[in-house]
Amino acid sequence: MDQQIRALALRDGRYSPQAFEFLFDALERAILLAGKNEALGPERHVTGREVLTGMRDLAAELFGPLAAQVWRSWGIRSTLDWGRIVFLLVDEGLLNRRDDDSIEEFRDGFDFDEAFVRDYHPAVPGDPEDLDVGGI
Image (cartoon, rainbow, N blue to C red; front, side):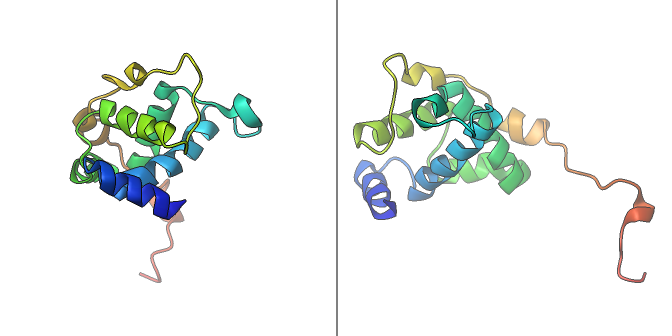
C-alpha cells in the first residue's frame, strides 16, 4: 500500500507523500482519542473533526512547535488540505467513507500557528530532585 499511496501523492502533486503517510498514522491516533479503538468495522469510523484532533495531537507530539512548518513543507496550508487528502484516498479506494462524510468537516478546523506555536506547552518533568542527571 505504501507504493500505492506514494504513487497517488506524486500523481496528484499538491502534497508530499509524507503527508499521506502521516495521515494514516494520525487516523490511528484519532480512533484512540475518540474512544473507538476497541470497535470493529464501521464502528471505528471517525469524523473529519475527530481526524483533525488526532492529527493535531500526533503532530504536537512528534514535531512540537515546528509542526506547522513541517506541514507547510508537505504542502499543507490549512485543515481543508487534510480533507482533500482524505477524499483523494477515498476516491482511490484506500479509505472508506459514510454517506454523511463531507470535506467541509475539515474546513477551518484550527489555525496551525495557534495550535502548535502559541498553545505549545512543553512537557516539564516533575520535581527536579526526581531527575537522574547522571551523577551531577
